Length: 431
Image (tube, rainbow, N blue to C red; front, side):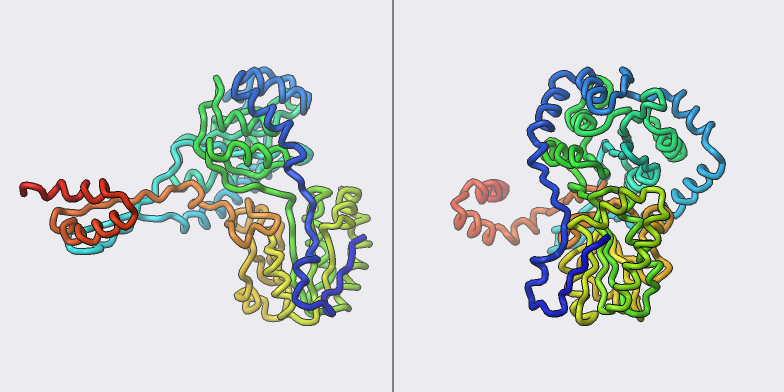
């Protein structure tokens, strides 16, 4: 069902044995390069071609007509609309505290330096829509972009054969509720290429955000530089740090919830309680059999990326957890809030028994687009800041410039760049 790794007798090299999914982007790079170049050269025609080749979608139009968006909204149940609106409201509340205002400082008399945070002019937001559809990802991408002040937002999502080749109705409904009308039926690397280089129907963007499969990730890597990207998303992952006070049934359910995403999804339990580990194993056997996606979940749990890790105490457990740098980290221990304060590396930390990761996926208010594959040690999740650029403004008067003229000359000469100094000296000649 799931492997057990015993770190209790290991030394300081346990990080070498941490389970990880093996994802080799280079394996698909050649194919993705071909797609990107084709879209760059042939535009919409190439996007339509690759859409049909990879997904059998025969929709020759790429931009979703407003009538199709309106129809999806009208056909959606009030229960779905209510749930989406509740998620939107909560995500907006959290992201509104992330806004940044202009700041300035007088470095010297007459010398003021300031920084202002300006939104990207245009962004492209990728919303997966393959084996599963994610209207929640529409919310997680669109809300911070809107709060940042982005004026031009394009959403791309794969067309569905059972929806006339348009993106899934739930995705269209989420866009409608957020006031987004520029939506394209495109997925995979061709969608990334369309946004990065522009086509007849879709104007080039400045930034691409959103998770996707290995082809999307490879494409984002290859277009980086032509546009900005948020991150290279890998398979989703959950890590749970738990002690003997944790409820084994709840822990097992949370491990299963992430394994449900994909056979490459990682589910990790780190515990100093051998009793809890055994109870969780038994709960997994019971619960997995009763899930809708039992085959997918079983493969994810049995994969090399998933494990129950036994540690000698919570101190070692924290070392392992911080080394793993999970996308989603749950703390189910005694005094969970205090333990959470010791976390250094994680995309998002879910504190206590009543904060499961699935809450963060939908309705916690936090963002579920988070760094994976250990990247949480150096990267952050999607936020309002993702869509902002810090622009510096330098305002010096003559007296303030004169004060640093001599020091500037020394530095310029040290770097053998005398014209730098002359650009200052000329302002004082004959004055």
